[in-house]
Length: 84
Figure 1 (cartoon, rainbow, N blue to C red):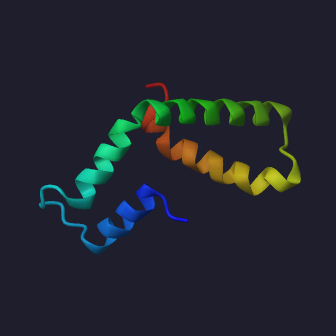
Figure 2 (figure 1 turned 90 degrees about the vertical axis):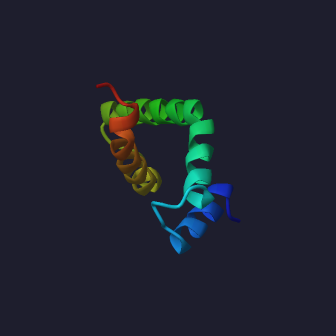
């Protein structure tokens, strides 16, 4: 199953032009801009979950890989949504 974002990312990979107006780059930007509040809320929830996991010392073993992926994503988005 592919999401709308997956489809746009695939189109962008085929045509990564920075100078072209419109196309998948603009569509992706509009998609993300349209969901900016939800992305911000998601980031804050993920950051809070990670903080609670850190306070609990160690996540359950089946969640370890997912927690690592979540932590990586949160850190990459911290410049956008974290405190300045």
